Image 1 (cartoon, rainbow, N blue to C red):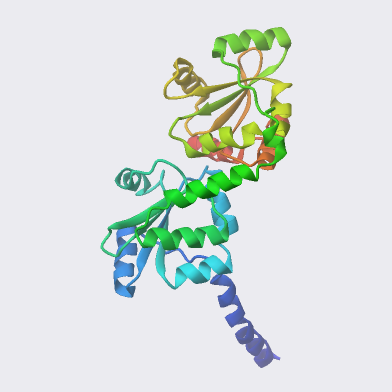
Image 2 (cartoon, rainbow, N blue to C red):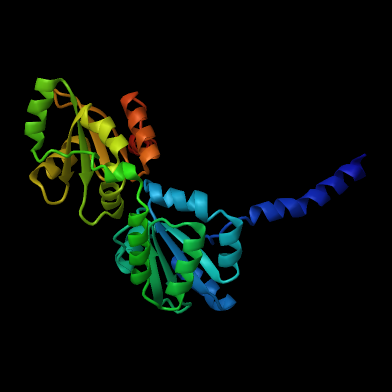
Length: 294
């Protein structure tokens, strides 16, 4: 019986190993160690520059990087390295790589020379196509522009109705006054001009009629450029806004009801908003709160 158990265990080990190999196999250690490994294996280095609060980063990790198709393609050609740009050597690499949006993907040769980069979410096939293009040192901007124009032609008619979120061009104090008169909460989109997920939200999710219906009738809706508007510094200090985009739900008396962060698709944003209204704490904000109390 014991021998049979051992034989069964030995029989399933190969299958366990196969399961572990699914998707991109990211190496541990530092960027310098990834370059050393690449030099020894005569491969280029793929770097995933991400942030823990970034929704598009999680999408790529959970929907693209863990697929067999992408794993088989990447593991045979690249040494893959991922780095949280806000932890460990991340902040220094963020300056060195001049990262302006998350996620950003960069290809380096083993000597550390950048061959090319692209940013944002993609499908599996797009990711492989983009990787090939930037590895060859070609400009990917023209291809992305063509794909963007094609997407615009295929837009959901819900976007075309033009009944998305109506951001009021008023100050925070004016929003408070109106909120008191109408007995509504205030929804504030806290953004930065350099933030790619912020721009994507304005160009997609916030243009959707369904999200417009959710926000326009329940809230006084405003957006604040946190780095350029006077209200930005006040909101940052008062409510501890430190990532973008952050969404604040403010009571008519000016107290914080709830908040959540990150770019999201229409349905994901609706879920986040629903949870916020139910008083459920955002996952990232909860982690940050617990980290600060330790």
